[in-house]
Length: 391
Image 1 (spheres, rainbow, N blue to C red):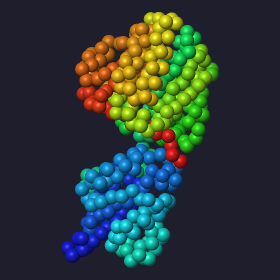
Image 2: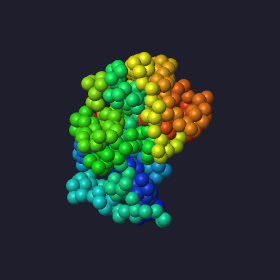
Image 3: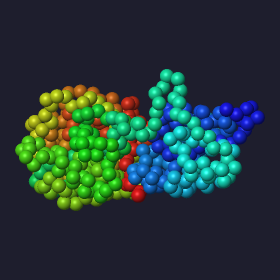
Image 4: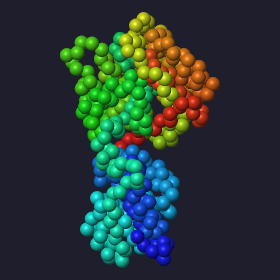
């Protein structure tokens, strides 16, 4: 460790810091002991190039989090690419010391520092007292999966042929990042997501999204199984990023699929929906018991879904809330058993603070998806819509 006279030296570290954890903080703490700490952060494009995956948090979010750590004096997004993406940042900061973890060092980095007269320091991974040693790699090998969940916004049930045979229409879904581990049997398509984990244990591959959805749909629905067929909206909602609508006309797979990736629309939608946990659908609960389906009720469902899409794309909050509520009312009119005992109590709790609500998935419990005017209701969970991969 340096003497008191060296406290004002500039120290530089660089990394992705995508899944920020206690190991990163311990590293920053130790590195800051050598002087004022400056951090270079890998851009979204660099991570996509090096790791062939999307980031968990965007570069803006990672910059915000790293800057908030008290050991860090300043942080920047590296403007270069590849393993040496930090070169321009180093030339900007002009550090006295370059610090790396033992598993992040290289001869290339050492030579780079020698050429610029920068002291090169390698630190071992040492967690703070009472904490486990952490690394991003070890976290990724854990039980947590980065596979998305899906929210069905409108038109739910139209993906079942026994509904769409009365009239064709759209189902609307959004694919969301797993910012929390949502409950099983909670209307977030966890059964389809669990099927996906058997194929892709951690994350979706970088491949055509509609083809991934087709593969997942076929994998989950064994042709030898003569029982219930899981609706295609689950696989599409998980695999297809952004806001998606899919048109059903009497068949299991939609005849058309359209997606919206407009950043202004997606950001607007994130600011106006949230999830409120209730309770898992109870064992033995049958939401199809007592179903009452006819052309008039299906037309109410499909009309609401079409209006919901138009309202979202035009960012009309009042029209969105009205169409959202109408879609849920149409669902319940066909499947009254969705409203299991206890659901109404949760609706009453959120009613004063939201513009509209619906149960996610087939209902019977799970989560309420709510339309909000900026403020989260009690217990509300914000959502992060999954953006299309940019590599």
